[in-house]
Structures are given as C-alpha cells and as structure tokens.
Amino acid sequence: MTSSPRLRECGWRWLPLSAGLVFLDQLSKAWIEINYLLGEYTPVFFWLDITRLHNPGAAFSFLADAGGWQRWFFTVLALGISVGLVIWLRRLHVREERWLVVALANILGGAVGNVIDRVQHGYVVDFIHVHWGDAYFPAFNVADMAISVGAGLILLDALRDWRASRGQVS
Image (cartoon, rainbow, N blue to C red):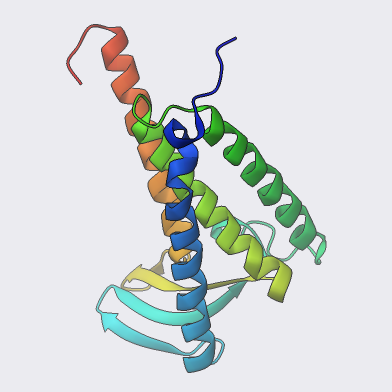
C-alpha cells in the first residue's frame, strides 16, 4: 500500500475550488430566491430562461414526488459521497493526478451546494432552464454544473489513462 502524499502535495490543495463553487452556488440561489417568485422566469435567449424552480428530488427531478423521505436519503447519500471524496482527495498526488483532483473538487463543491439546499429548504433551488421550442431540459444550478464538469473531467482522465496504457500520446 502506498502512503498518502504530504498535505501540500495532496488533492486537498484544490479544496478552495470546492469552497468557491459552494459559495457561488449559494450566492446565485440566494439571488434567485430574492428576485424571483416560484415559477417566475425571464427569457434570456430563445433557448434559455432564468426561472425559479424547486426540485425535491435528485437529478432530472428523479423521485421528486416520493413523499418526502427522499430529502434525507439524498442528503445522507451526498454527505457520504462528500466524505469519501475528501478522503480520496487526500490520497491523490496533485501533480500526478491533476485532472482527477480537479474533477473530484468540482463534484465535492456541487454535492455540498445541493446538500445545503436540501437541509435548509427540503428541496434544491434550480434556475437555469434550457429549452428548444417546447422541449425543456430539466432546470439546473451552479452546483449541478460543477458536478457535470467534474464527471466530464473524470471521463477525460479515464480516456487519457486508457490511451497512455495503449502507448498512445495523450
């Protein structure tokens, strides 16, 4: 078993990114809550509205109508994942695994941002609503964007590792 890198070399160096994402997420949601009533919206482009929506479920409103138990289930799940991510970040060497570290820091920030909403309100505040005509993509927020960017970076990192294992240039 390899030892963890020293603190200044481990993935914890990217925890300020997570904290910054939580701050931006909560700031943007607070602004929406002050300036928009539930369901109120402002068209920005023909394909984008800013609107205040509440999501008591998970991604894409999964289990939104489940009766309330999902609030604490998703809260505990996200907190457990967040603890796991912090432990994982501690074990990663920031220079050797930069893409993965940044990815995990993004996911951590997004998870914590949405957990704060669930604990505080019982739902997540969403406000970015993309659509094409009458076809609407589920609304999302800064935390959701951070999680999506993190997931994308994990896929890119895996692709780079796969290519390197095959002797291809990354």
